[in-house]
Length: 330
Image 1 (cartoon, rainbow, N blue to C red):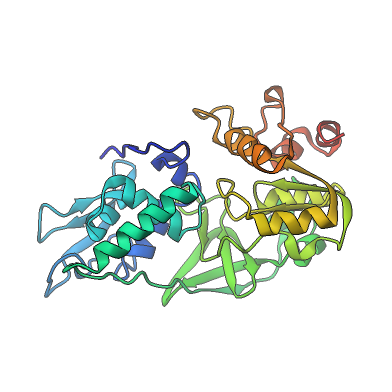
Image 2 (spheres, rainbow, N blue to C red; image 1 turned 30 degrees about the vertical axis):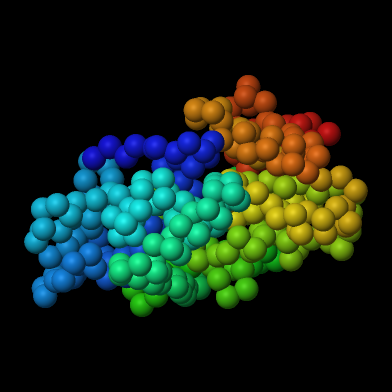
């Protein structure tokens, strides 16, 4: 089943959304009866007396398949579209807003929210979006952890400072998931982002909010230079190299004006170091970097394409040290 983008906005595309969250994340969030891939459950889209629905892999995607109603076969985007009775672009905006991806313009988000509220007040079912609760089981650090993080020149002490914990399994609401390979919990107050670097389908699972700025609590009170980058892994890498750094929860999220005003009071210079997505159409990382720089008057730093590294952590790993990173940031 092909997933098409029909957005008129620069960043509100299915491929951009799936670069930040997974189809699994979307189904878990909007389909409360879904517990396990392939396991049948009762339909939440119609009256259903027995479990007839499964979410299954299909042509490299996940498919909501109702074996009791042949018309109910949806990818994650069309599932949200059908459930909320909105347009395809409306479904993308729902996902964008609920996951704090920051892909829609403020005007579009406001217009959509008003339209959805009006829709909900009509003679139509109201679907309550479930709150996601994530819990984790911590394990001891091992040699595999050291090997993974050492390629970015990040040590255990720094990981502990940034509340990064190795885990053996975790729960999403009441459903337990075992980690098949090394996985970590990034903690933000009582919320978590689960990072499984070798799990291509579910690399990221999160219940964080857009106000959970990665690396914010570890910043000094003031300083000469601050770098806003793409991820906590990049923040860790830059911190290890001697720089002050933070990251939003999503690279496609525009930092709030209140946050930027505060940071400008604390740091002399603020720069953007986002992904150089040179292999992707429209290079979304650099497109967003330029947008933020234009908005707030920052300087954009782009890793040159000839390094064949899209972000700071890739650059350090691919070149074996901080030398080239420091040349770029000089």
